[in-house]
Image 1: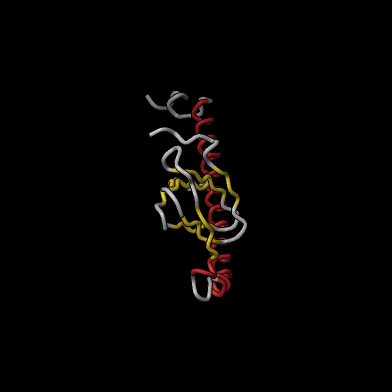
Image 2 (image 1 turned 90 degrees about the vertical axis):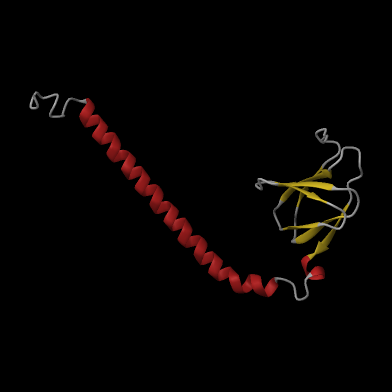
Amino acid sequence: MATPSMHDTQHLLITEPAWLVATGARLWVTRHGDPDDHVLGPGDRISVVRGDRLVVGPWVPGDAATWSWQPYRATQPGGYGWRRRALAPVLALAARVLRRTADRLADLARSAAAMARRAQGCINSGDSMASAGTVQ
């Protein structure tokens, strides 16, 4: 299969949560930061959130890539608003704890590296017992 041309693709910055729905031929979608590409057949959809950067184009070069947007509220009775508000404090706390843990692990790694450098420096400078002639 030929690689899609930049002229056949569109670059999109998502401004609000929605469903991207393929309406014509098969659609190729790639999302910045997502290691997987997505191929949507007619009627298939993918969830997108605010801030997502997408590249969208036809799966088969030369086909017309068409799609539509469906807001979350239109496809999900009641929407996701109350769930998001309920989970936000818990997820924010979890994010802070994980960030603090990552910072502490990075500090431990730097400390271990510094100790290893000091130990290597002592051995290199002739401070070992073997180089002082103590061990025979």
